[in-house]
Image (cartoon, rainbow, N blue to C red; front, side):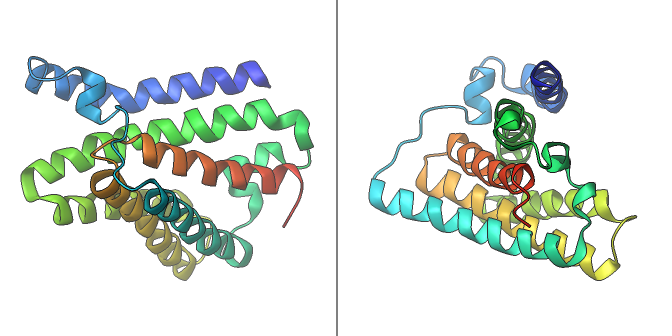
Length: 202
């Protein structure tokens, strides 16, 4: 299970990086390295207490609504974290690969690193952040469209779009454009979902 999780994580990161890499290669190769272009750089934090308070608040604002929606609308067998159900600590390493690399890193590279920064460059921070967050939410809703009632899909779109907006906001407003912050937040929230499955909390 560990090797499978590692391979899946690496493949997903590569797939989510292909379009950004091609875009960077033809438009920005001479200006910035690929990783810095995506925002993979050390966050510059002016007020650490304020920064960590915001990180904690965003994690809560992501975990509570999404888990509430899952509880009322979504069969847990549909969730990617379902593979860890009831496995306890034996699934810890695969869960880390899934939460931090496969979903956390790949989605942050594409949505907050690639899409948001391109939209920001074109439309400014506010519009760029709204567009990427709506795309983020819509894709998550679309994946569940065939499995849950339309009202549930709308709630999924709204909750994940809010999550995408908040992660984009903290990157650009509190982390000097670094996606390391949203990567950490995203990884933690996915790890919480994995722990819920691992220990049958819900």
